[in-house]
Image (cartoon, rainbow, N blue to C red):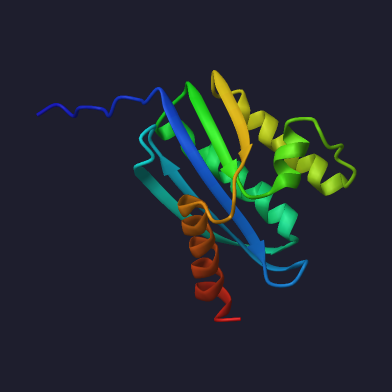
Length: 147
């Protein structure tokens, strides 16, 4: 019996959140990948060690872009509640911190895997961002306990 590969989608929505307990402190990321109908394709959570909130936001986005090629090579729309990250990646804010500059460069290396990539800031009340935030807290609780 031949295996049938899953067809790639024309567009994937990537919702990301990163957070730390302390700034810097123990940090984690949460990602929700969705199809163009906003139906969830996959979720990911991971403890990332010690980081600032902004570093965690970038690390979540990088991981989301690592996961997206499983579903598309065409269009990726990245959504985060981090105005800083979106503004830096879209070029409206300068990146002054060397560590954030390194992470922004890492994002750009991931972007070349796709035909189109967009970065959008959305409200933290967005249901998929809330789910990504839950995943962050689950990863932190699993690794470090409730805090």
